[in-house]
Length: 146
Image (cartoon, rainbow, N blue to C red; front, side, top):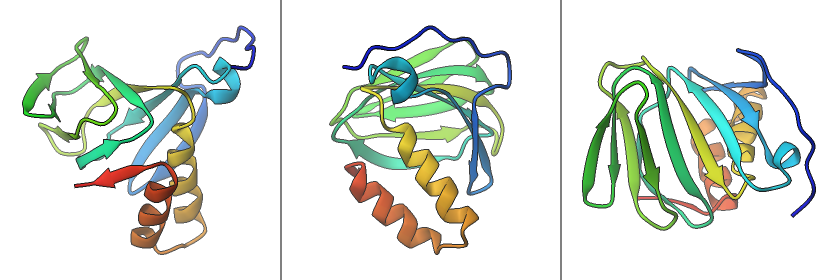
């Protein structure tokens, strides 16, 4: 693991990304945490269908709104200040109680999954066909959509 340096971000700072009508703010990445973890703030997040990560554990911390997370056979309703953990290899999904509302942090370990968001943002900005982009980026980051 690479050595990292201390840094600070104020509210609203970070790498801004956008795709599928949602906004993402990379608050910590592989290059800022020495590869330990990444944190992406999802603003008006997308509902995420059932999927499985081969490489990353995910931890979700809800800032605004009501969200329903499914992980394996369990379902969790999580509101502001609540959190939920999804271990790698376990199928999970997310939906908002009120469509297109809410905000949460997604922490992944190890770092690197922020690249998934970067690549989809760049694909949409370039005018690429998004179904093909999602498929290619999902393969690259070892995500199985179930």
